[in-house]
Length: 388
Image (tube, rainbow, N blue to C red; front, side, top):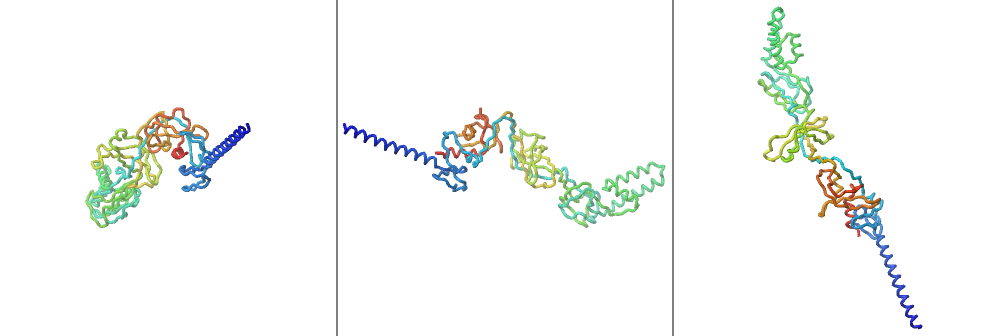
C-alpha cells in the first residue's frame, strides 16, 4: 500500500513539472510573437525588439496579430505612417482620355507680309533686326520711288483742275481716281491729307505698319533696290497660335473638328480648346495624322514650345472609377483593398475596364463595398505577404 501511494505521488510530480514547462513554453512563445516589431513603410523589416528601420529610419511598431490570410488589422500609428486613405464607393460618369505630345507653331492666318507696292530704293529702315515687336501705325521703312512721285503729281494736278472747274463733275471723278491710286500704292489717309495741305511732291515715302506683331523675317537692307511686289519683312501676330499633335489613324475615327480638348503649355495654365483641323492624309514617313488646335496666347507662349494635348477617348455612364494607384496588379490579376472595420482591411479581386493616366474603371468585384483604399494599397499587400 505504501509502495502504491509512493508511485502515485511520483506520477503527480512528473505531470506537474511537464505542465509547468508547457505553460512556460506557451507564454514564452506568446511573448516572443508579441515582441516582434516591423516598419510601417517597409514591412519586410522584422525585428524581435523595438528600434529603428535600417532603410528609412522610422521607429518600428509592434506587429499586430489577429489577421486572416486576406485581412490585415493595423494599429492607428501604422495606418497613419503608411498613409492609408480611403474613399466611399460610388458610381458616376467617367471619361477616359489620352495625352499627346504637341508643339506650338505660329498661326499663318495672323501673319502679315509687308511688300513693296512699287519699284524703288530702300532709303531707311526703322526696323533693322528680327524679333522686335511692332505696333500698328509704327514706321517700318522709307523708300525712294520716282513712280510714286508721278502719282503724287497727278493727284495734285487733279485737285487744281477740280478747283478751276467746279461745275465740271468729270474732274471730281479724276481726283477720286488719283486718290484711290495713292491708296492702292500704300498711302494712308493721313499722308494724303498732308500731301493736299503741303501741295509738294516728294520721292521719299514712309511706309507704316498696318498691324501689330513680331518681326519674323527681314528681307532687305538700306540702299537696296526692290521691285514691285518684293517682300520687305514679315510680321507674326502671336495673340493666337496653333498647337499641332500627331495621332494614329484608328484614333481619328473618334475625333472630329470641334472636339473639345485641353491644352497645357510649359509656363502657362491649362486651357480648354477645340480641334480645328484634322489632316486628310497620313504623313508618309511616320504614318500618323496631324491635328491642329487654335489657342489663345497669354503673352508668354512662343512658337517652338512643347505642349501636352489631352483628348477624350471614351465616355461611360454609371461606372465605378478609382484612382489608378488603388488597384494592385500581379500575376494573379487585379485586386483592391477595402475597409471592413475600424482598423481592418481586406483585399478583393476585381475586374477592370478602361483606364487613363489617372483613373480606372471597376466593372465587378466591389458589390456591397462601401470604402476602398486609394492610398497605401501596395504597402498593405506587402504587409500581408510578409506577415508571419
